[in-house]
Image 1 (cartoon, rainbow, N blue to C red):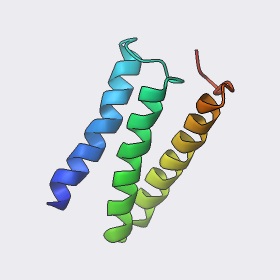
Image 2: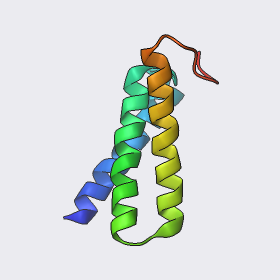
Image 3: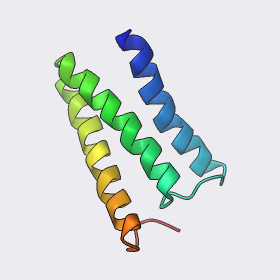
Length: 83
């Protein structure tokens, strides 16, 4: 079951990335940031559960940056690198 959840988390991040690359989502859009936040949070939890420290570091920071950016967007503040 962990593998299915891991694939879902990865697909959320990949969907956001692909959508941004194809111009369907902007990197400062709520949808892009929510996909990244949930995908990376799922993967961070699974990395913690499996004691995969390097993967946990990557995904936890990804989730924190996504959450911070989402917080900025929610308050009408610019996101660095956004359009």
